Length: 185
Image (cartoon, rainbow, N blue to C red):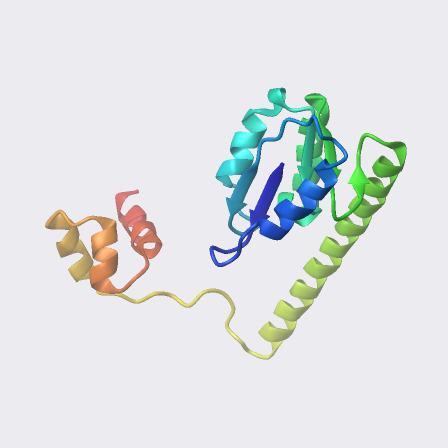
């Protein structure tokens, strides 16, 4: 059973409750719970990776809802292909999808096509919005983080870590890391 919430301020209780209700029809099921916290677009979900490494132990993967598991249509199709290769059935409780049935596979194929269409429409809207903003003269992209590069260099020579420099300079560690890579390369 796989569950995911987007932030630390949320919990998986409602997802777990719905999955437990589904499992009442399968009293002999051996259940292992996998839970992640983080955005769906994050591909480095620790529990999901552990679940995928243990597919050989599973016969069915149950999730509360499709968007709790998959970050895109392509991700969904890839993971479902992996499940199929490992002979693991997929069930989404809230979406009423059970891929062990012909009706479940049909509904899933229709939802996949709709999700792909929706993603394409969103991409088009974003592109149109960016074009319109550009025509209005708006600058696009992230604002460049400004910091004292000489002081950064001195701090590094003193043996300070990137995390320490980040704290002292008030700049995200990733900005310093990217900047340092430019000089090392």
